Image (cartoon, rainbow, N blue to C red):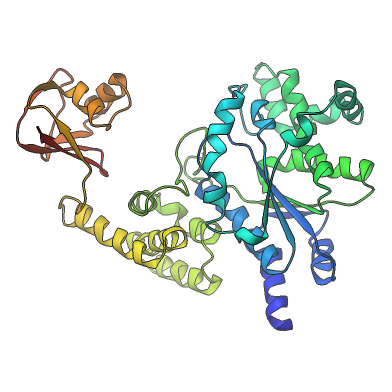
Length: 401
């Protein structure tokens, strides 16, 4: 038992971890003590999805749960209405309270696909910030200087590029930092782009609670060729934890070859030796598609189970390798007759608007019964049943009344 605990502590200190502040040794000592620690991870509900990039943090939190520590998920329903400028070159769009509530509606279900429901506490930072007085906020402001906040690399970049920075954005690190005080946490977990905010919280805990908060950062998934985030809510290019098994599998297979190993390391809990075996196969000239097949299966199995992963693999092979239609296609019933292609895409739900429909046709993404449609003014006479396809994975069967 002691050996298993020591191995779990070792993984907690290293697996999917970028840096530990003030030191790895301090965290190791805390983990080996008998003290029950409180660790939290915060997420601002800026979209309805928790995505694969977030899963890195969830795997670490699961290890803390397995070691018997207290895990808090802090939903930043208040700070989401402020907007964290982390990594942004412009002021982020302000969200309304109703938009924020709509976004976090399914967060609990998504997060508990990895964490233990009985050991996970969900909190909202509106609990304290919704009641905070202006006097208290100014008191917190007085603990930091303009020089300290302006050192943030993102602010420096925007100053050099002569781009505006709102006073509200200066406040954000202090708001997030005070969350640590309100939760009386021992450890905060977050991606590397949150380091400035988390260290602000570390300073505030020293002042208000007279304690040393430990900060754990997790690596961002970056495409080495483009330098862009691989999973970004603001860019919309991510694999959501609430994607269907088929969607998740297909998106995983579409990942660039150069990020395969990072995705194995950061987005799965596969043993390190198995990941090293994949790395050796790739280095010896193995086909990246084989590695991605394993990656896709592993990811889907985590969120949907092994059976669904096997079914998704079969479906993917059927559509993309054998060029067959999917086994299950959503059906839409329409009256027989002529339909402009743009209207047809909207009526079937394959496009959210006519402008999106026109864009899809112009991009050559639309097919009717496997035949490409490239004219946005095309009009189709619908009778019997036809299959409409958008992109590689979206299909609708139209059945006429």
